[in-house]
Structures are given as structure tokens and as C-alpha cells.
Length: 353
Image 1 (cartoon, one colour):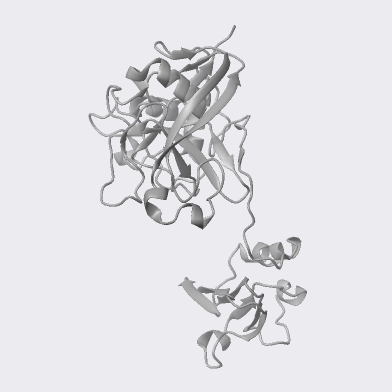
Image 2 (cartoon, rainbow, N blue to C red):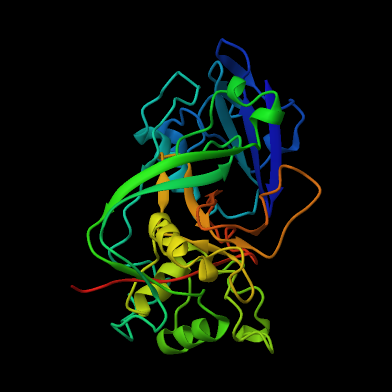
């Protein structure tokens, strides 16, 4: 049995892991533990109805059943501390989830997540497009079939599907972090125009002024803007510290959408001077409308490369500028943590016949 403990503002949580093959039922706190003498102590596995109703059960509430090869938890709310608003839902939610005695993580296929019909726009209504036309200089990708070669760096997370079996990437060199290629094919139903450059700080500021956009989670949003404005002298630099939903909201307001990774690459291979290693101006990675999920892990493909390059370890994501055929798989953790100083975006527009 292994346990970890966290405590904040009168609420303490223990997470419990049973590495054995048989179930464990018993006390997990010492008889003289302070949390047993006052406040509310609640196991978070197989919670009986009496606990949900707030009535102390007859049995010792420090007793917890942890299934073999499984996990459990124990929560304590100190005396005089009000129950957190999220506690009732936390207590009732497990009852709706069928128990699965298999604690392993089965393989799941990752699938492309369709682009939202109404892009997430934080606390505002879906932004109204301020233009229906694409900007001058956008690179038009013709409709039709295509075949692409994609270059990437092998990592422990795999690429389009889940992490490979451990023997597939050990020993680490040369089987992990090595350069690989794959082939992608598809069909564009209509021509697509992809912007020749990333959205700038000034353009994003115009979007904010016009829509009053506020993201649902503000953590790290435009973290490089002092006092909510672009830094002096950086109006024409690519906007960064924006996540996938921020980028989608801007492109919808601009009358378009994010390009898919394939559209981005096709445009880049048509004009490598605007998308590749020698593209002008500051370089950042680009969000694409190529979000995937296997129901457990969410990830998005980035294109382009950035001027920033972390050095000192092979585990850092590769920096520098890259050709249009290069892609990086970014795991998206949510809560604003994907907003980065090295990631911006371009918009795309479907071209009418």
C-alpha cells in the first residue's frame, strides 16, 4: 500500500494505491491521527448512501477498501471548515460509474475530434465574423487528392496513436528520439486559403476590443502583455500565450477557422519562403485544427517551429525552425497550461467556387 497526502484550506486528501493482487480493507490512519478526532472523514470508494446524506456511518470512517492493483482515496474536512461546493458531486459520481476490477489501461484508438460548430469563446457569445474575405497574400491550396510525407521525432507518447509498448522504445537511443517519417493522404473538398503569417499582437488586440472576448480559463492568457496591452514595439510580432480555444475564437471572428495540419503543410510546401525555415519575422509553432482524443488523452499537432530552442536534454521538445513537413504532437493538459511563449497560430478560409 502506498499513500500520498495533500492539504489546503482545511481540506486534506489521501490517494491510496494497492500494488498487491488482493483487496485491502482496513484503517489507513493511525488511531491517534488528528483527522480522526474532529471534522468529517470520508472514504471516496464505495461510498454508502448515509455518507452522501451527511450522516456518519456506524463503521470506522478511516477504514477504506482499496481493490487489488487499484486505487482509492480518503478525504477529511476540518472542523469549522464548510464542505467544498464540489464535494456532493464527488461523492455521488462514483455510483454512476460501473466498477471495473481490471486496473490496467487498455489500448484505445485516438480519433480526430471534429472542429466545433461554434468555436469556444469564453464568457462571450460566439463572435460574429467581421469579414467574409481572406486577407491579401494568403496561400491557396487547390481542392483534390493529396499525399504527404510527415517528418517527426519519435517520443514515448507515440504519434497519432498511443504510446508504443515499452520494448519498442528501449533502450532510449537510438529507438527513442530518433527521426522518423510517415505518409498521410486525403482529399480537400474545396480550395483552402491559409494566411501567409501568424496572427499578430495588434490583430489579436483588435479582436479583443471588438468582441470583449474573455476565455473560460484565464490562466496564462496573454501572459506577455503588461496591463492587458501588447508590449511596446511588439505589435507586429506573432501573438502567443493563446490556447486552442483562443485561436479558434479569433479565426471565427476573422471569418475563417484554423487550418488542419495537412492544409498547413500543403500551403507551406507551395510557399516554403512563408512557412519554412527561412520564413520572415519571428517564428513560433502554429496551432492547427488537428485535435485528437482517445477518451483519455487529448493532443494537437503543431507545425512550423519556433526561434526558441530549449537545450540541455533530449527530453525537451525540439526547438528551432522546421520545414513545412515537420510536425510535433502536443499533449493538451487544459486549465490554460498549453498557452506558451513559443506557440501562435494562423487562420484559414475556404475559398468559394
